[in-house]
Amino acid sequence: MREQGSRGLTRRRVLGIGGALGVMAATGLSASAALARRPSITGAELRSAVPLPPPFQVPLPIPAVLKPVSTSGGADRYEITQREASAEILPGVTTPLWTYGGTFPGPTIESRRGRPVTVTHRNELPVPTVVHLHGGRTPAASDGYPTDLVLPAGWREHSMHMGHGAEHGMHDPRAVVTELTRDYTFPLDQRPTLLWYHDHRMDFTAPAIWRGLAGLHIIRDDAEDALGLPAGPRELPLMIADRAFAADGSLAYPALDPTLRVRPGVREPYLAGVLGDVILVNGAPWPVHEVDAARYRLRILNASNARHYELEAVTDDGRRLDLVQVGADQGLLAAPVTHRLLPMAPAERYDVVVDFSGVPIGSLVRVVNRLGSGRTGEVMAFRVARRASDDSRVPSRLSTDLPDWRRSDAVRVRDFSFRAGQMHAGHGWLIGGLPFDPARSDVTTRLGDIEVWRLVADVHHPVHLHLAGFRVLSRSGRAPLAHDAGLKDTVSLRPGEAVEIITRFDGYRGRYLFHCHNAEHEDMGMMANLEII
Image 1 (cartoon, one colour):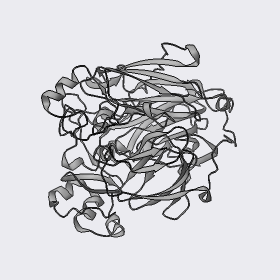
Image 2 (spheres, one colour):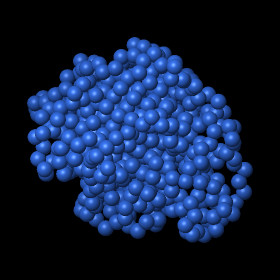
Image 3 (spheres, rainbow, N blue to C red):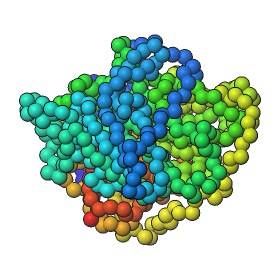
Image 4 (cartoon, one colour):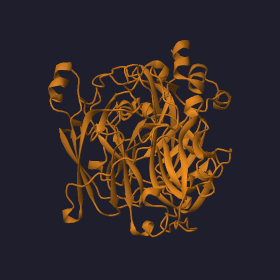
């Protein structure tokens, strides 16, 4: 399908879109010519208007593990209230947030493979919400489709008064809307891994996550527990997210409608994505964590809206520590893969083991971001505090249950382009030349079918499939990269790149999504429907 051009863009608008995107849209240059001058990131950075603390002063917080309200009947039940709260993210500065349960990140849910979980969410925020368990093998009714809204009290009256519908002009006859509360049921019949839950409301996902609506969900099982990987206090969940702060201490975000009630979208310079100048880990700016001289398991999530990272662990004397990857988005690898530099796109998760035993006591190991500059080049640090015994290990064989799908197993091959384009008389981000429409069926496949998808990008697009994990087959006709190992649910498409993935659509029938997880792209049309029949 031929995509609409952008001949009407002014020079100011082109420069606002940023980097290679504006060059291609305005001049029609070939991808290779335009991308020769491509930036290493897609998006524009906000600058904070408050003094920022020095790095490695604030202790790393560990999100609290939520206790179930019931464990009867072979299932666990949880309750989370979505509400406004304030926190001291920057020392001495109070920041208003939208939260799950009053904290940012929200509370962590820990569960066992195959033991169902039901989470009752109560919406006490001033806008509708939707909860998506990212990476979950979840029935469609609980997957968090963007129009399956949970309305706050009085929202219907507000909508009638304002003269607009709950879906902002997009009619969805299949939307299931509830008021105040909704039960999300997760069977968790899937491999042990790190998932995360976040808001997924139609047109407003990006600012809602930015304001704090994100939390972790860890699935465990007996086989993983028996491997001997670092555990207990030596297993650290790390949610990395960038933010910027306004002069009053609030989180700065360039929303066209700061109330997030009526008009979606961001100001022109940020159409390609919103980047912050403060790097938070578990909600703390450039934190430091005291560790033993031993192995640690780092469960890393890139929860940023648009920022990509290339992570390294560097000692005081400039030595780089190995990042031994043991897991990907959808759980354990077959065998460990050792990295020195680990690229991470938004929504990707990496499970890595770092060995601090060879680091001098009292010294610092910095986690740096090679894609950052200035303050965004630092992420966090570990201070090696003491010698300690360590009976953990990284076995040479981690799992034997990864799918062995072959290209010859695929019943069909599909092609999808992820590119900028025009929608509704404005700038948008399109899949296959089309902006998202909840009433349109884009892909229909049968339960159990194996398919190969070929994904092509103009600029950076981290592509996420709901429900289905996949394997990366190739990048631009060459072998996958080392960090593509294992079963994934989000793959980073780099500018001008074509990536092939293979997956089997099993688990549940129903309506699901695939989309770009640059959250601003997602809000501006870069989603499509996936119907499993």
